[in-house]
Amino acid sequence: MMKQLASVVSQIGTLEPKPPWGLLDVTNSVSMALITMILLGPIAALTLMGSPGSAVTPLVGWLIGSALTVAYVLLIQGRSSAYREALRLRTAPLPLPFILLLGMSMAILLDLASLAVTGTFLTVPEVENARFFDLIGWALAFALLVVTQPVAEELVFRGVALPRLRGWLGAWGGLIVCAMLYAIYHRLVYPPATQTAAAEWYALVLPLLAGLVISVLRAYSGSTRAAIAMHAAFGLFYFFKALVLAG
Image (cartoon, rainbow, N blue to C red; front, side, top):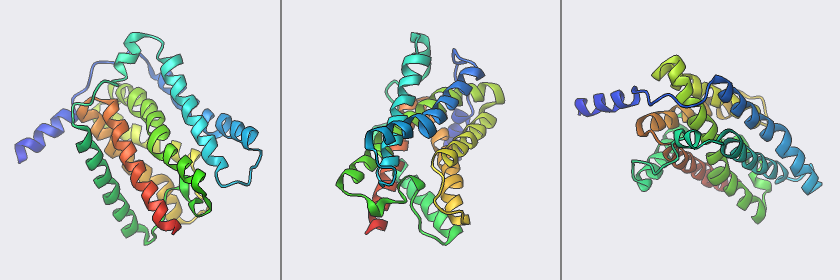
């Protein structure tokens, strides 16, 4: 058992080949993700929906922003075959059902830890208005949490940022800094409706912990596709939790 654990830790601490991009590309990708999610997506949603007070308008904005983020990473940043190969989007070395089950298990574990710390059973800020959703709203929430958000965020943070930060700061330092950047991004893009300590935990600390877990999987597997699958499992859990809390 100890030998297996040591092997896993060693694998996580092993650096992959240096990616063909620099810290400026990391900065550009994270900045573009913020711009599309905070500015471009919401503006497009307001233009399309014409109803800033609708509960689904933010979801539409985030869906558009996520799609723009994916397009930027794959079409603009990923213009070379070497870049696309270094994104590690090939088939995950771990079975997909195992990754999904592991992701759901970790999501439940982190949620129980959040409940123990805050004493409050909250959903994530992305769907805190879920009680106002109709069928279309729930479909949009599912698309965001399980499809577009995992792809966009994992391309940026575990595809582009993580391998470069690990090459710069070391295997463990880069992993931690990447998770911190991911948490700050989440807090800026999905701010809580209230400024309570519990709401801040779910908006900032929970993404930090989830980011650490997904980054560890990415480092161990060497696959951004595996990170996307685990993130989708997290999103599926939060979707079902929102359904429960909405009654």
